[in-house]
Image (cartoon, rainbow, N blue to C red; front, side, top):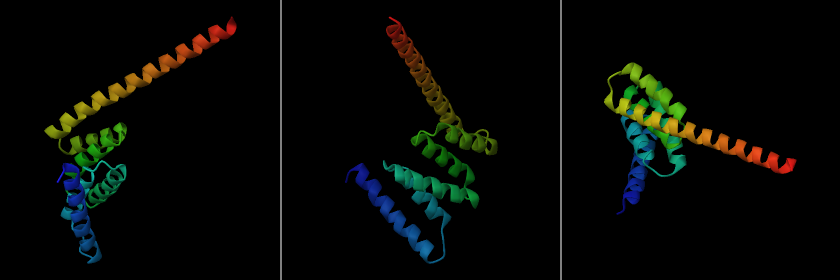
Length: 140
C-alpha cells in the first residue's frame, strides 16, 4: 500500500470507531483526538477543516489542551492561515512556555509570515511600477 492509501485506510478506520462511540452515546476524546490527527495528515482541505472542528471541540472539554493547540496551529499553517496559527501557538506557550515543539513551530511560522509579507510588498511595488509605467505611456 502507498502512504496515501495507508492514510485513507486509517482515516476510515478511525472515522468508523469515532462514529461508533458517538452513536452509542459514549464519546471518546482519545478516539476523537486520534481521528483528528489522522484527518490533518490527509491532503484534502475538507479533512483539515473537519480536524480543526474536532480539535476545537476537544479544547472546549479541556482534553490535552497543549497537544490540541499544537495540532490546531499545524492545521492552520497547512491552510495558510498563519495569524490564526500564531494565536493558537501564543496560547499554547502561555500554558507551557518551554514547549520545544511549539517554540520551533513558532520560529517556522515567523519565517512563513515574513515571506508572506515580502511577497505582499513585492506585489505592491510591482503594481505601483506598472501603474506608473502606464501613466507615463498615457501621458505621451
